[in-house]
View (cartoon, helix red, strand yellow):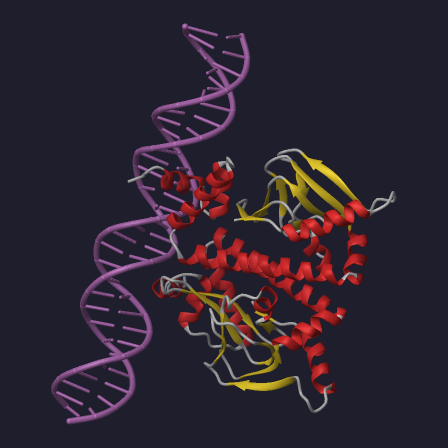
Length: 187
Length: 187
DNA sequence: TAGGGTCTGGGACAAATGTCTTTTTAAATT
DNA sequence: AATTTAAAAAGACATTTGTCCCAGACCCTA
């Protein structure tokens, strides 16, 4: 539920510490509630989260939101848009204070062109994410909400995260009203 | 809805025609209804579809199926399992007669290690698929079935595919009964 | 303290979906 | 053609979910 990628983080931290003065990679702090990437915008940089938790979500035309996943250490954002040269599919918002490495798109592109190890890491990351996204879609369609909610609550508990009810509902793809109903009866 | 990837197909066909006698890439025909990959199995080969249409679906423990996508020319299957070294997430089944290029896992791995162009194609493919999967998950959760059904019907119409009602329901993530209900009233 | 906001949770009803069963349709067999 | 069999569609009812609205809690300010 909370995605992380230690290998990727190590890779980036190596680059970060080895670089000289013309720093291509910088570290930036985002306050809780601030936004790293805006859905629909054209990002010129990518971010690799060092610590903290972000929410990755889609806002649909009908005003509803759907939370794709929660991203934490080692997860990369904006790379898909960079690869495909398209606007951001999701908004990435900091749920806690977040520190992230920032890389210019052009520089990341050049890295991709010459570094096989990075390519490998990227393939693994995308594959992992695809599996997660697909599994969850299947699970959500075919199981009851009760199942999904149970998982989500366990997740919050384990990480001591206090998700807002709105976020929970958006993750489950239901309304606040439905979530409240599911939350009440504990027989 | 029907995924294709012409660039990838070209790439593979080039390889196919350039190879000598110790053919690493072969062409295989699958009859309608036969299965390319079995969910849960450990595939030792990957397939790139040359023509025909396949259904990629997950069977959950509760006996229900969820159709992820329909794959056609240029789409690759088994690559995620190869990258992550995990069992198949989905079953890939031929809906029509299908011709596919077959590549041994070990050979594909070696190609990935030395060919930057292939890496690039793979990144694009995975990114594209991720966007599709994610968009659809969001759409399905946040819009009415009516919307989704309309899209699906238009898709069948455009491609002159006669999807079974079971397949349609599995794609929409609903029961046959619900699909029939949605299909009846046309005011 | 009274009044007015806003926010949260829940009630009531409508719409949708699932499950189970029956009916209808189509196909196959004799 | 008549009978049987299997497959598809629909009916009935329970459950779930969404929408709309209202009551109470909380926090301001006058």
